[in-house]
Structure formats: structure tokens, C-alpha cells
Length: 359
Ligand SMILES: Nc1ncnc2c1ncn2[C@@H]1O[C@H](COP(=O)(O)OP(=O)(O)OP(=O)(O)O)[C@@H](O)[C@H]1O
Ligand SMILES: [Mg+2]
Image (cartoon, rainbow, N blue to C red; front, top):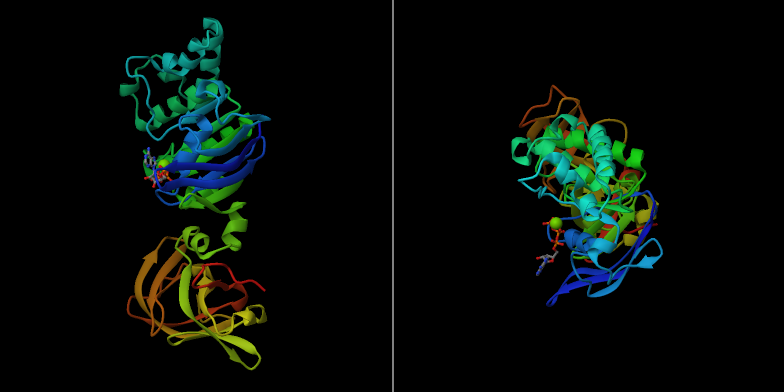
């Protein structure tokens, strides 16, 4: 097991900093997910760790050794890509054993390791077959198996599940998590899919424009986003972000956006007089239950039934809002509803800088 530490890791392509001074410590045996929108520098970061992309500046420690200038094959990492890149003319056995063959591992040892890993991944039957005769899911397992037989110090995954259909992707997420527990290996996993990040990571690293926005456990990041970018990126449906102003009222603070008026907890009093964006998770908007009324009559524009939950798209004389409630069979498009929320669950951000306003 091996820890990984990135210090000031930077990659420029011309004037663009694809990865900009990234500092990140990953514990031995940890499963860390880099997540961010397209172009945020995730793949570039991973490729630098793998040794497939030269660094512009900074260090990459794998264990105690700075490998920033070490050749890829001497870094003891294995990378699994979105495209499985299997050798088409080789059997599954030979695909999985190829790296060991290059390392001159004895044949019997290679076959033993390939068979063991194939059993873990449930592809024993497929060992004699050629890749093109396999389904996408089976090919994905072979690509994974090829990495596992090498027994690397660090696994790197770049969106390995994105070519699979939704159901198989969910199943493979669960299998990868179990595999991680079984191997107790250090794993760095890249995805643009926040659900994948939330469900898989011990910790997630949210990236945007080459920079780390926040690092934390999935629920810590979900509950306590440091800035508006993270608040809007993590969570589905997306957090309601409502632009308005905070005004003083009887020693407290009141937020206004169109007809929306919300008394804020005293912790937000410092925001008085400022342009503020409030963040309210859809699940914290409810229909006339206990709690302080948001003071907003809304029209129901769309009702989405997910089974256990119902998503409501709402419009008002102020912001557009999304609410998530427990299953609600009665509500219809065109209904008028009154919303309530718990002011203590409401987050506030500086509209200009996006920085979270805290007590
Ligand atoms: N070889 C290259 N030459 C020039 N620019 C590049 C090169 N590779 C990446 N970039 C740029 O670096 C930035 C980060 O790209 P990167 O592929 O790391 O993003 P990503 O987060 O993996 O995105 P995606 O989710 O789309 O895979 C982008 O602006 C991209 O255009
Ligand atoms: Mg990428």
C-alpha cells in the first residue's frame, strides 16, 4: 500500500493552465475521486501521475519517491481508461497477462495470477475468447483485470464506466467499491459524474478550471460546500441558487429576491447590505409543513415521479425553484403551492466571489 502526494502540480498547454498548482495528499489504501466538469483538468492530472504527460512544475510523490521525472513503466501504477484499449488479436488471458510477460514473470505464475483475478471478476469463462466477441461490460472487466494482475502500488481510473449502460454502470460501481475493500489498494478515480463521485469516494476532490475547489468526504462536501461552484455542482437535482439582497429587519436579517422573503438566522446578519446568493437544497423545500414559510406562492410547472420521491419544478414572482418531496400522488401541473423551509438549512454565498458566507 502506498500514499500519493501532489505538490504544486501544474500543467500548461500554451497559455492555458490545465492543472494549476494542485496540492493533494492521498492516504495509503484510500479511494479518492477527482470530479469536475469537462475540461477541469482531471484527465491531465491523472496522466501526469501515470507518467503519460510531462509536468510543467510540481512534484508527484508515490510513497516517499518524487516520480515527476520517472518513466511511466517505473512508477508502479496501473491506469484503466474509458476506452478499454484491449489487444484485439490476443485472448483475454493474454491481454490480462501481457504486462507480466513484458516483465518476464514466469508463465505458470502469469497464468495463476490471471486465473485468480478472472475468478474475482467473474470472467473465467471468457479467458480463451477474443475481445471483439465480448460485451462492453465484459471488456471493461478485462481492462480492470489487466490492471489488477499487475498488483500496482496505485490504481488510476479515468471514467472507466462511462461506456456502459446505466444499469451496468451502477452494478460496476458497487463491484469496484467491493474490489477496493478486497485489495485495500490506493485508488484515484476520475469522473465528471457527481453521483458516481458521491457513491464511490472515501473522499472527493472537486475540480474546476484546473484548480481544486474542495476536498472532503462526500457528505461533508454535500452539507458544507465552500463555494457556489461546489454547491451547484454536487447534488442532484441541483441546489437552488437564488440571487437577492440581504436587508436589516428588527436586528436580524431578511433576504429578498422578488416576492421571496426569508428571515435568515442570526449567523447571516453579517451579510446585510450585500448582494447574496442563497443556496437551498431541493429536499429542504417542502409544501406547507412545519417550519418557517418561505413566504412564496409557487406554480407547479412540472411534476417528476421517481417512485419514492417526487421532484417539482416551480415558478414564482421571484426565482424558479426545484423541490424534492417524498412521493406525492396528488400534486398536478398548474397547481399553486406554498413553500416552507428550515432557515438553518439555508446556505449563503457572496454573489460576486461565490465564497460561502459563514457565521
Ligand atoms: N494535449 C493537449 N493540448 C492542449 N490542450 C490540452 C491538451 N490536453 C488537454 N488540454 C486542455 O486542458 C484542459 C483540461 O483537459 P482535461 O482533458 O484534463 O479535462 P477533463 O477534466 O479530463 O475533461 P473531461 O471530463 O472532458 O474528460 C482543457 O482545457 C483541454 O482543452
Ligand atoms: Mg477527462
